[in-house]
Image (tube, rainbow, N blue to C red; front, side, top):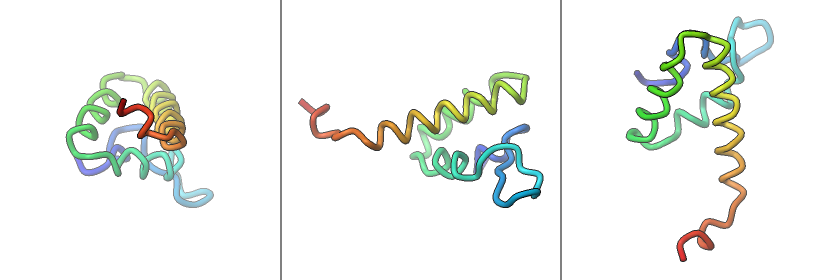
Length: 78
């Protein structure tokens, strides 16, 4: 798997009316993770049979990753 957008129910929406199911920015954010982390996240997203659950998981994960990006990480390396 190259992108979480390849998982059923998680095709990225790039333009209005293109048929995508989730925001492309959320897919891109997860796709930029290192390959090991990406594999774990992709398995976690694909774990649920419901597309709605996978979409919610992606939305929450993307919001969490954006929040992590706002932290001053050197403070965590104590």
